[in-house]
Amino acid sequence: MEDRKEKTLRAAGILLFVLLLVCIWLPAQLKNPAKSGYDVVLLGDSIFAHAQGEGSLADELSSLSGLRVADASFGGSAMAYRDLAASPMNLADTFCMAALSQAICARDFRVQKSAEIHEVATEYFPERIRFLETVDLAGSQVLLIDHLANDYFSGVPIEDGADPYNEYTYAGALRSSIRRLRKTCPDLRIILVSCGFVWYTGEGETGETRDCGGGTLPEYVAAQEALARELGLEWIDLYHGVYPGAGERDDPELWMTYTADGVHPDGEGQRLIAKRIAEYLTGETPDGE
Image 1 (cartoon, rainbow, N blue to C red):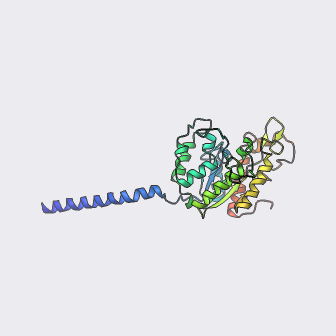
Image 2: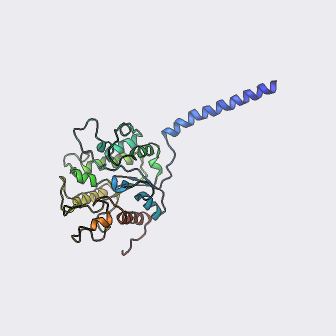
């Protein structure tokens, strides 16, 4: 009888000890999640996120580089806030880099989770939010940021001469985002990535000549490169030389070789972009250079 009572007390003691460990350990894990295990995390717009899962740019990049790649990009997002009057923020501003950098560094995604996500091609957004909630970005090696195209399309001002941290400008939003990320993840390798060449299909125009309100696309690309130097960031140029023939001849069929619609890389264009990034990350020399 005594043996049974002793065994029961021992079992209860062990159970209590386990419960105590769980109560102490679990909150700590939720507050400080385990290292992500990813070599590369992508944060950007639909240049990265045009496709998800198998056959995506992240999947292609992983295959070519041998690195473990996770895509946390949101199509339609920009670097900067775009709607000064929106209250609460519209969907685009909820997922812009300026807003996401705040959420990532505070580990608070309530704004993104409360957004009404019902626009076309946003069905993957909730999964991406859950990923960002759990991933330890500081445990990754490289962060690739490709926000640029939607700032250009929306006519977001490149710079505010009076306020270099104005998050309704491309440069201000980038400076603010990098400042936050460096404070939270000081050892993270951050690389800016430009978008590819852009065709306005059926209009006989390209990003070389079309000014959407803030300048032509080459002006945004040049500003991004200058900001990379200013902030001590690495920069991968996808605008010049990635799509053979782009900008060199007037060929209305050229965009169909590299993009789905003149903007989003598809097929050969996606392969070429993944190849350029993989070569940069692994230190290989691109063909012909």
